[in-house]
Image (cartoon, rainbow, N blue to C red; front, side):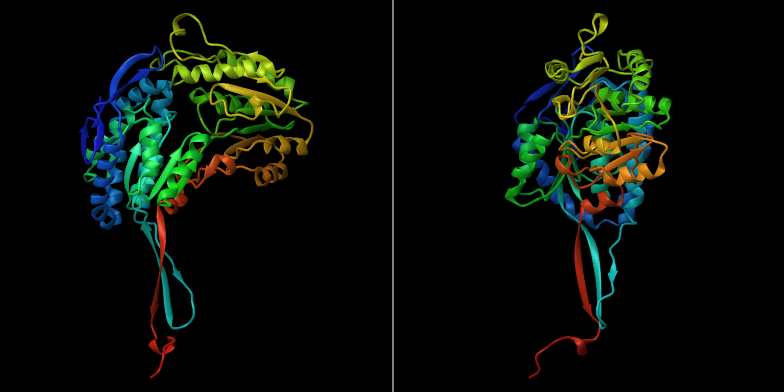
Length: 487
């Protein structure tokens, strides 16, 4: 189990010698003491990346792609170890780590491995006598700061397009869930990524993350996390006006209309909020029900939520594991009191389980009916297995509720009315909309938000654009047409 910083192709201790225990959220036992990067370590990593940049960016795109394809193969060959590390460190149920996290990570590296030699510039039709074409060039050394909820998957979402485009990377995984990221670093060495191209440094956000955002040697910072931290990233980036890409919080509206397939909507809504214990920025955390079907929906949804099997994430029968830290568990449970203080009704859950799970970071699947769509639990991101139920009378009110937060990451709707579906998809203020499904992602489909949910896009051609800059080149093919002074 790797527990050191990965700098310039080697695992090394932090300059300060500082470590932090990464905990198993099932019982809060220490898994490993992991090195914590400071400013001196970030400086070393940036220097290594700068030294590696000319060779990596000038390498044939096909050869960069081959390395990423080899990495995808190695991830699949080490799938069980990666799945167990992810479940041990984060609380993801092992069955989700096996069938979702690891395969999605591999397929994303494979997608961008194939993209590397297919991303091209353009020839632009300008006035006669001139050839104008563009090159897409790598930004340079990019800093990437990722959260603790999907650490393995985020290595591919962030690093795969950056590397395919020819950039070098300094990544900071979350200090509380670094283990799968460090295993990926080990596999990168085996795949043949040159020294210095990728550097992975666990560290505290206020120290390592802040310094990455400030560092004058970093040309771009890509951040996934809270909106509050995203604002600080923007402020810190101003020193060298580095490019910034932000994927921030969400408060997804999941709207169920009166004509929806109720069974499909019930199961889809449970997946939207309870997968990964609700620790997802795109979670369907606002369940917006037409008043005609609200009672019938809840008669199915509440028993389903209560039936979800909580347990040790390494048990294949577990359907929902612990939250990732005690601090976060307590934050989620605090919203139960907030809901009650504003007149909300707890329909299910709202507490930590007792018995064998009491020492872990568990929260029961929680359903709260809000008094109003303006209540705090319907406006603020809880980021846990906590869904707020709101009812509406007509389409206009449903749209008002859906767009009634400052967030704009993802949202969904369930209806058999095709015209309504397309109209809501167009009018919802959201970077992504799911119709009769929820939380679908694919490496070819752009992922990102609007408003305080951030800007820029992960995945697909849009991600490659985020990690490149355009150079316009003009060629005079007829010197007689060029303006000039005659002597």
